View 1 (cartoon, helix red, strand yellow):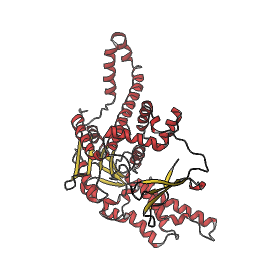
View 2: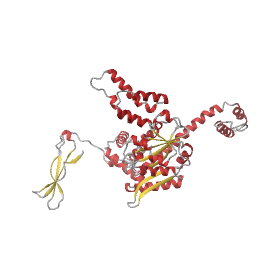
View 3: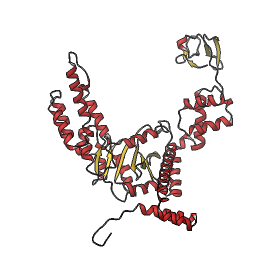
View 4: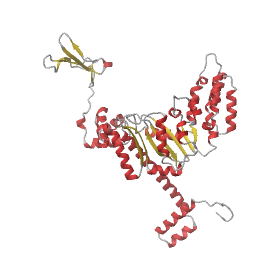
Length: 464
């Protein structure tokens, strides 16, 4: 039975006491149940004054927290690790153990498990610093923490494991930078950096929790990221994050300032805009083409729709000639006002940043959008939300890194199995199988597999 107070507590001036009324929450059923409490004039304690102890509906009978056994508690902990929502966990527990727990009961058990794992919520920031220090000692990771000395409060932090540093040594030619929000209880923006490895997999290379979305906050995170690089990236993908402009969001200003935060830290790197985000801007700006006006014929509507689709496809033009033809066709159309034409002309001045045909002139790992990092953030959101602790965020990144390693090892094993099948058909291996032990044969196969990955090229006469 759910009860709530009927408005604020009121004071009875005539009798000199206070009155509080509890009533049933089933307002839609106009339930008459209520309990009225009044304070005693002498003791000032609340006493039941009058009541109506009948409901006009069936009462929901939930199991109490006392019904939670060690086995149920352990199961709740296992389900918590999956990142499922509280109501989903409640339904699974009720089905598995034939119980009828309210979701709030399970929620408090989840809070208990979190406190057991990460300590008190007031110690969250200090626990994160301890985890950083421990990981640095055990795995040789890199981390930095920025605190407000006056208030002794954590403002920003960043982290890069030893594996992430190794990934950047080999695959830092193209990186993607993006920011996501609502990942922790302090509402600190999460800046994330990814690379693409030799298997085409998306890999985490760095993350930072920033004080806010300002240029200075981004600069702090990017400076620490750069300090761990042995060479600057050739290409950097990002979306149009407003903090990178040192001011209020304005797409034209972004193009003119050319992402000041990244440009200041990585002046030699080419900065590419996400083509998908540009397309979303076009959708908003030219949405009037997608709306039918009164008295408009079907042919006019089809013409405007084709024009609208042509504009939306500009960022994804595969060839420069096609882009120029489509652009000229759009600019000559009478449906666009002078303001819309000028808008497009300003965009085109920086077409090398967002048009696929111009982006692909330089190696960019087959990307023209930041969709890889957006997909990763979607995975993060399965485990993180605005109520999660900083320590939970850190553990989530460690878990994702473990999954990346496992996936990479599985891919290598799969490729090696395929290569072994081919190698076994070699005449050399067939002859060696007759004379040598399986152990010796495995060594020969591994060396042969490694040798197949090399290519021989002629540098000059007599030199290969």
